[in-house]
Length: 326
Ligand SMILES: [Mn+2]
Image (tube, rainbow, N blue to C red; front, side, top):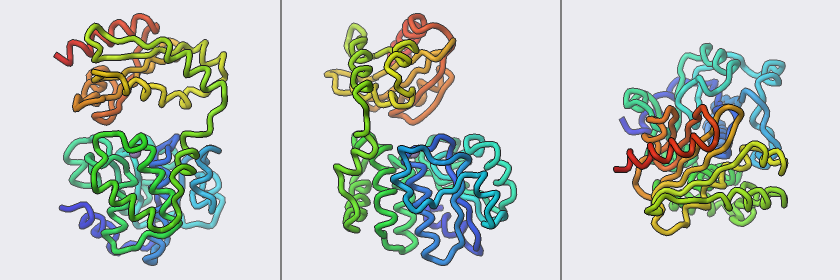
């Protein structure tokens, strides 16, 4: 069944809807929640938007009207506690939405995942999942259009930010003409200022961030053929520059401008473990590779966590990637 058709089936006979997303949400999860809330409210649904935790400071610009309520505040409010439909965006398992939210999901008659992460085809057939979309925000945009609802200013920045962040500023292979058409419709609301929107996500760094980036980039190496490139970061360096680990997630993208690059890797020390991130610069599916190494993700962007020290994990992983690429 087509995604929009399926969505309409799920909406049938529903009055009260809850929308949530995964823990430590990014702009894709948050933007999708906010835009979908506005859209469903405009067709007369009672919608509550609840997350396990409150939004981090850096994401608050997306939710100036405080549509997303943290679980604790929600429980103290008089908002409905039972629902006809429980929607989870940007993940396809209730294991990632937080313990309290997971318990809450049991109280709903129906549960629907709207997502773009790879999962078994049975899950795809039951939910609104399209793994060919670069962002959940893109799926939400299509669903809103499919319901015949016009984009409003309130939906524009959240959806634009969803797509901007998950496509890594329109550079991933899943960006399509459809993505750009959707972005054009969002811009026609008059609400989007691209440089401002970009800077809210990527342009808020401190000088220590640039200094750490410089240090980490100076560790860059490639294999003999120059098709695999990697950088490493020790915990000590992270502490020295007082930068949060998740602020360093995008460091890896700098490797993608290398000539001949096929796979970029970043190794970050975390206690007795090393977090390994992968990016594909071609059609090589790093999601499957990460899965083989105990992790998972998209085909162009994936990660895993491996026990061991930085040096040995780098050596082992680069060898394993080389074998998998042959
Ligand atoms: Mn996403």
